[in-house]
Length: 429
Ligand code: EPU
Image (cartoon, rainbow, N blue to C red; front, side, top):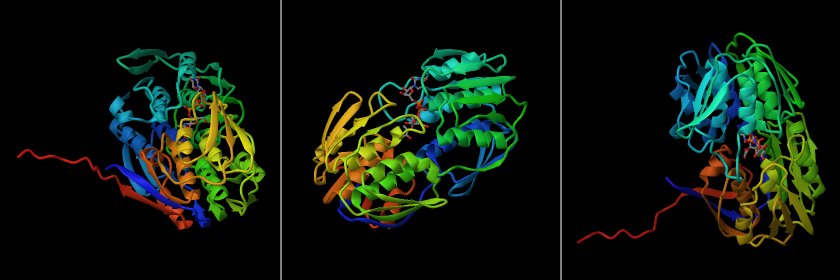
């Protein structure tokens, strides 16, 4: 059923919100379970549609899946015998590419439909392929599928031409049981890469240097099932932090790793927010109009690209003119047209947006053009006076657990409602 969000904005946010497990760690760790010889229990899984999609693929491949509760699952990969992930199985999911690395690592063979996910222009996988080939796999493209096969995989040195989260993860997955030493240079350093390495090491892998730009993987014969709890979602936490700065208020954000939020907190402080860090929580207090600031997105530990639309939305109502530069993706400003409908003054030139702050946004019907753009529309709706309707919210459901319940608990007026088709139906007499 098609649904939309209706938000009556203009209320400050107050209270406490608990952050779920990290989407981008979950979508790497779940396929990695296929490398084990015995069952794994994965905890702190976010209840989002990208995770259900991955679990569905794993089940189609032959994994036995038992839901323990809403955030824990037991997966038995013993009987996985298929190496094919079809287009229908991978529908719309970026992380389907991780089945290439995981299935290659498990059975030296993988045939996977090309990844989907958010549309930010071209999303190449050349660096993933370069890594697989260095390990000894032969990659071909047949009938719209990526086909990878190897007699055996052997450790190799791979230098990434661009810092790629996906390529770093995929090469780790393929290399963890390859013979000998693999070195990934210019590796991505995101928290979810460290989380994946910790998970694989807890199964018996030998990975060093995750979190730095040189990762060394000494191949092991076998990996055993383990119990593992996924890290909190940095971007979900950042989204709630930005929402408080936009709508004003006082919110305690719990179940977070404050270290992962430093680059986001630094910018929000520059905008005038008071942010206090605790062991596993941050408190955000904002009681003024945000000040302008410039933001450039970069791979970790830089400011995350996945927070770019949300921070730009806050800057849309800041005092003064801000410049937001996108340093990761070619085309991540598609949401700007939607903010413009709400009265924002934003000029985009290539990878740069010049944002001249307006007093406030006007409520309007808008669309979630992708996942984080959708989160930005929620922030815009919450701070604008009046009724904002957001369509295409399936993008938001891919990555935000219980977003309506969480914002409602903070005092926002947000509802999920079905879209009723008003096209008249004429019956023949
Ligand atoms: N790139 C290449 N060749 C490759 C791979 C990437 O040129 O083989 C380029 C991309 O075109 C891009 C840059 O390298 O310009 C970085 O891409 P990366 O591979 O790091 O992105 P990804 O792995 O496809 C993940 C997240 C994205 C997040 C990016 C960057 C997952 C499932 N997705 O994508 O998250 O934006 O890293 O941090 O982990 C989101 O959660 O909203 C989201 C889009």
